Length: 128
Image (cartoon, rainbow, N blue to C red; front, side, top):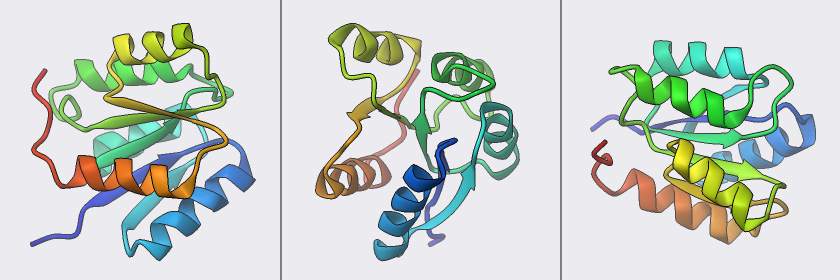
């Protein structure tokens, strides 16, 4: 059985380092991207099993990235967890409506992130 691959996307070096450490400690296989265009390209080429997506990126809004992923038959079913400092209910609703499967706000508890990762890697892919 192949080990699941996670794509972590964040333009902030410290945030990406934290997520990378969490993934390393969890023995997850992962790749990283620092902007939206890179994230879309990597998602299409690598077809990760889960995407942890910072929604405030310099080139593309996270909601637009998710809409692009959902329009592509190859990336349509990849679960996407929005990871963001935008914690208002309206923000959460906007990202879920755009196609994110879940949402975690920064600063997050590492245990909460690990639980979300585990939940989406151990469940069947979502139907769209």
